[in-house]
Amino acid sequence: MEQFLIDNAERYKKLVAAFRPTGPGPKESGTAAASPEIVVSARVRPMLEDEVAQGFPTGVHIRAGSSNIADLHELQQPVRGLSRIRSSNYTVDRLYGPDATTSQIYDELVQPLVPWAWGGGIGTMFAYGQTSSGKTLTVSGLERHVADTLMDGSLEGERKISISIIELAGQTAFDLLNARKQISILEDSFGVTQMAGALEHPVTNKDTLLEYIEAAASLRKTTPTLRNDNSSRSHAICRIRFQNPSMPSSKDGLLYLIDLAGSEAARDKAEHDTARMKEAREINSSLSVLKDCIRGRALADADAFAGVKPAKKPAYIPFRQSTLTKTLKHVFDPTSARSCKTVVVACVNPCLADIGASKNTLRYAEMLRVAISKPKAAEYSPGVPATWNNDQLRDWIGRNSGNPPITASLLAPAESGAQLLRLPIPEFLTRCLKTEGVSPEQAQAFQSKFWKLHIDSQKSVASSKPAGKPAAGCSRMELLDSSADPEPGAASIPFKERIRPGMVVRWNPPAEYASFAVGGKSYAMVMCPAQAAGERVRDVRGELVNPADGESDRQETGEAYLCALVTPALLPGSYGVGLWRQVVVRVEEIEAELLLEWDEATRYYYMTA
Image (cartoon, rainbow, N blue to C red):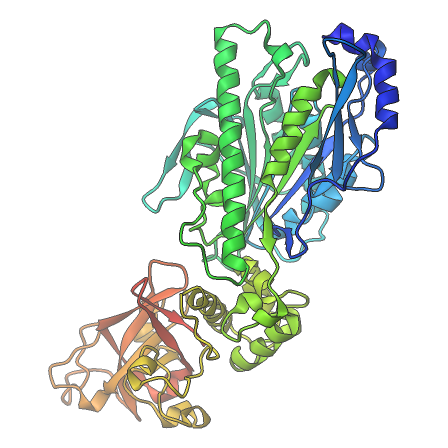
């Protein structure tokens, strides 16, 4: 077959030159757009010197006047007559030709993932393609650019950076930064996948980061093939973790740079033995599962953020079917609260001799693209944040962010409601704290309020009332799901003048209660005036609340209340009320009123202001 291609190279070039596309490629709906969470791109490498020397022509062409459509022309040998071409085209989000540099690809695709992960989200870059298509070269170049960005001082704030690099060969995992020692991919009791046994190494400068990357590359499994003397026969996963010292309770940001094992064309497998055939099957199987997972997550995100009612049957994401996708479960799991962005780089070999493998690569890439419906302006709803534009979002922030109001232009400079919902929580809180006078508690409470409004809007009957403000039609029982005062006009009265049972407050505890503060914060729920407690009632320390003369060293002065401690619960941002852990709080120790709202689904309280 190769000799046939070489013999007919000139005729092939004439047929390609005469080719005229009949249409713009796959039609895109005017009411649809690519998923904002995943960008699918393709990079066509230059022809190699040996391919040109043998006389092979170029089989993959970027369509003139288009930046995302590739035309493939296969040369066919009919039973009778002259050879002819069969053409097909494939559409991706971004298409880079032989002249494109790795720096260009980094600036347009991968660089946005770095501040995203720095801010607490998860950024993932996959590179895949046929062996010898330039995959590893592309990834190594992108890793160097990532190192430059992390260490050039352009990112805001301070982070503790650590790196781990593992290899997946079939169903077995190895730590490439610990002499290829075998590790285990396991799920913990919370359903989070852990790389048990893999070491994480702290990074403080660019040279150290690059040394770890190069050391891992030297230990990666490679095997000579007919197309590549150093073909990668395993998946390499480089994970960079970002810890934010100013927000120790927030989840760490993660950046994944993944160089997938190279696939092989049929002609490359002609001399494979049984072991190599098994290896090829495992690689193809894991890549197939990966495709289903990426597409499934994109469909789930489209349902969640398009401002429409979710589908009855959500997309199935089979992330447990391979070790690769199990390792990256949090990237694909639609029940995960983590904000994820994904970039796919399909590396394409343009040689006509490899046109079959290139066609499969581009078909794979095109299948990853998911079009989502664009919400119409008429679909705007005050109770559905995913339908808000930037002006509507800013207006809601100004009216519902507490006192002092969070500056809407700092929190959402250009984002719509749907885009702000995708923002990583640590980044959301960091933007809130840029407003002078806003406390971490207020920022956390406002984030919880915004997210809860979104969750409520996904129910079959979305509420149209503004969050935090009771609607006129609500019953008193519905209003009592929150610690907010249900009486009309209560908000205009200073809170210290309307202290009542059920009010939640932030207070400055005296020395005897200081040990019961969690993370330097002390919250309590008012139960009754301290004087109204029985003679035998004791506080959390075992001291009498109303001691007789001489029974306690504590001297009560002024007005005081018996309160229950409010402490952080198991789920992030949730709280529990310790009804039996009681403290005595003086009015002068109270700093502010807080609002707690009961969530029936999780059985926890959440701060809303």
